[in-house]
Length: 224
Ligand code: 6PG
Image (cartoon, rainbow, N blue to C red):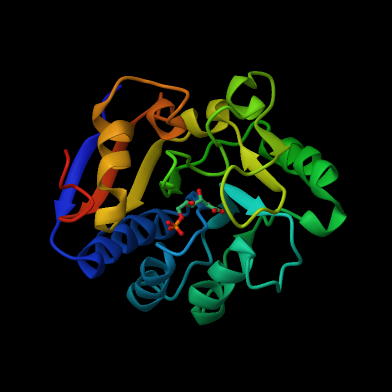
């Protein structure tokens, strides 16, 4: 399955394009999986400005770090500060409850996701080719039976993770990668224009139901 590339000039343009994706899904009352890392912060802020009423939507996370929800490394905290706290109409929130412990949180999230279809999964791309918390060589890559697993990261921050599996992400109706910066150019080429390769987990994550797009700024698209 191929990826449609949407190349824009600047990181701000990329954030706006991702925000528009989020807003469209929120207005439609979609089930939306958010990503962590630093790249989506601006997209979340813009999405809250463009559409402050998310009351029809349900928000999930593609992955979470096993830290307290108010820890600076928490993906939930990032989304809360940049998006959720800025909304006038709050969505249903399906947070990964990592304070239960990573394994139990993964089991619970797996049970919540059974029978659900994500309308939109927003994903990032790590320098080593990971997406969500699906790292190169991770046993999570081979997981077929579950939609959510606990695992270890291959890059900092070195805290345990809970992640949706490839199967769960492929089941999303729309997958949107948001990637910016020249330091991501080579890995973006491997992820979006190379063959499927477990060394670059993002190359394995494509929507089986609908479209997969990659929003890149000019710098991140330089090797594509
Ligand atoms: C996480 C993520 C992860 C992230 C990439 C890119 O919890 O770390 O969800 O998959 O999207 O590592 O992160 P940056 O945007 O910080 O480069």
